[in-house]
Length: 435
Image 1 (cartoon, rainbow, N blue to C red):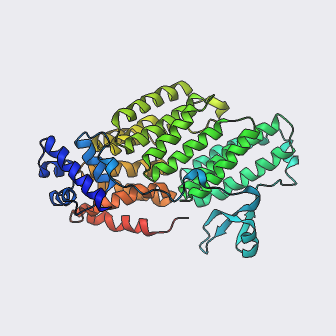
Image 2: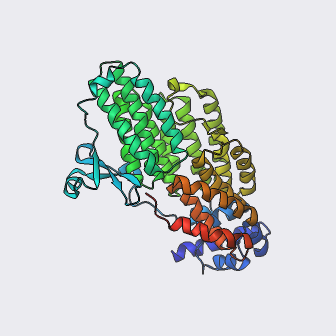
Image 3: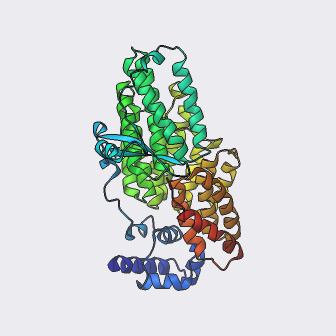
């Protein structure tokens, strides 16, 4: 660790001197103190990834400074998270205040715990489901419910949404088991979409293992229905997990695997290209990031909004905003161009309905962080208050990642009156448990 700090400090000093910048000038541009940067250059302080990205951007190091900073690595890659379907059930755990959340549990452990506190939901076949499969309107009704569930996911906690999605997935799979073709394939395809969404809600609840469990079940059901795109999309889901772990190389690799899969729709390829761009931004590789963003824009434009009969994986828009623009802003911030990122996010979030709390929390946190990094502390603090209002409603583990970064950044400005007002609430939000 000490050797890594020394190497970064030496390289930072070399590049700063070559650029003709004084320590004070660089400190002003990256919004860190001169004294702190001095300790980094002498190796007495260990650099963080955030500082490395800012120095990399200002000094146009092309990711070489970032590469000298150790980043946390997961104990095991997301793809290695495994659970045998027959040996595990999903159970709904309920707290005294009435809140609930879904967790995977070995079947034997669930039985030993007892039914008083747990509601077991396996993916077996409900014996009474066959009659429902005969109704012509069943599939249309569940499609409509799926859209409503996704809208609900924008406004409330995963602990509310996930039990509902679990039941719907379970029911659709049971209906499919007794239906004849082509109804069976339609039901399985819809069940797979529910399961994939459950994976997203599990990740929002901070459960990466559960996210991959649900995604694998979606892949299985999609394959049984002749839908191979979910297998590719599972790589994009894994890449999102590595992205939030600041694993640039893993994110890029998984996203490129998804784009290389044969027979994929422009939509899935476009979503994979966006994820690749985010990976390149983490690595401070501006040119590769921009190429991926340009590729994604063309693919998503080509895909349109009506692919796959209205049941397309993902979306080319996010609650009224343009997804490509939102991800571009995300990347700009990671590339050290925070003021430009803030401008893009201002425009895009103005298009998002006030009811889309999850979108406002996710990209609003990124906007507040961008303004803070650009040195506009008062505005960043005001935006943080608005983000916390939305974050309280949706209870998102991924949003909390940016809130943690924001707390660290604003923590360096504790003497600022606006920061003194918001910082206690920000810290309290990070201390509260997430289900």
